[in-house]
Amino acid sequence: KQEVTQIPAALSVPEGENLVLNCSFTDSAIYNLQWFRQDPGKGLTSLLLIQSSQREQTSGRLNASLDKSSGRSTLYIAASQPGDSATYLCAVRGVTGGGNKLTFGTGTQLKVEL
Amino acid sequence: DTAVSQTPKYLVTQMGNDKSIKCEQNLGHDTMYWYKQDSKKFLKIMFSYNNKELIINETVPNRFSPKSPDKAHLNLHINSLELGDSAVYFCASSFSGGAEPQHFGDGTRLSIL
Picture 1 (tube, each protein chain N blue to C red):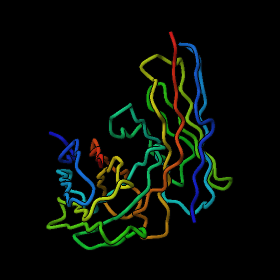
Picture 2 (tube, chains in turn yellow, orange; picture 1 turned 60 degrees about the horizontal axis):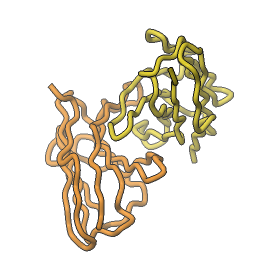
Picture 3 (spheres, each protein chain N blue to C red; picture 1 turned 60 degrees about the vertical axis):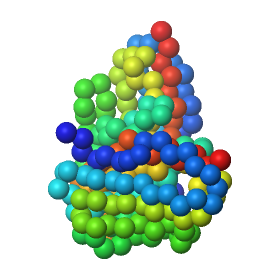
Picture 4 (cartoon, rainbow over the protein chains, first blue to last red; picture 1 turned 90 degrees about the vertical axis):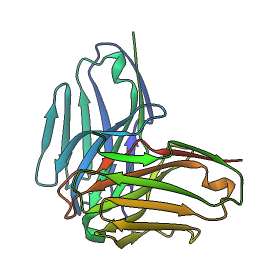
């Protein structure tokens, strides 16, 4: 059974800092890993998707890496801004169940302060 | 313009009632999902449908009955609502096969009184 863990559970940083969010998963039989952002009371916004054959993906100030064999992914946020404050979720799409099942991590609640 | 839309956005009702949540996607996807986010913000899959056929059912009580009239719609009907059903329910859609991202609706916030 796939289990996804995110560390830290909460993080508070001053504006401008670079930061790293961590995600680990127990079953390396995955199609891809997706990072989401969730603002309070809102839905999920997809940030980056990394296929199992890829090592990293970049979008603007965001960079996500994937080490499938060790079951780890990181989300790097450069030059953080108050608008980055949100909960960040990683989710893996497992091979079992026809590849249609996303298993979510527990989330990291990020606060970027002025 | 909305890709995955859910209605209603908020639902407040009493214990024991029956309610439905509707979901529609205009992305041409063949697979749709229902997820539940509990009070601790943990998201877990409930159901998945591919071309109107149920393919994932994650040990959800049979008071929950999904229905997919066509591949663009997936509705969730809940009978005899209980306090523990209070949560945010998210609909999502994607192409099947594993390589494509899932797209999520804004969620339906269900509160049981």
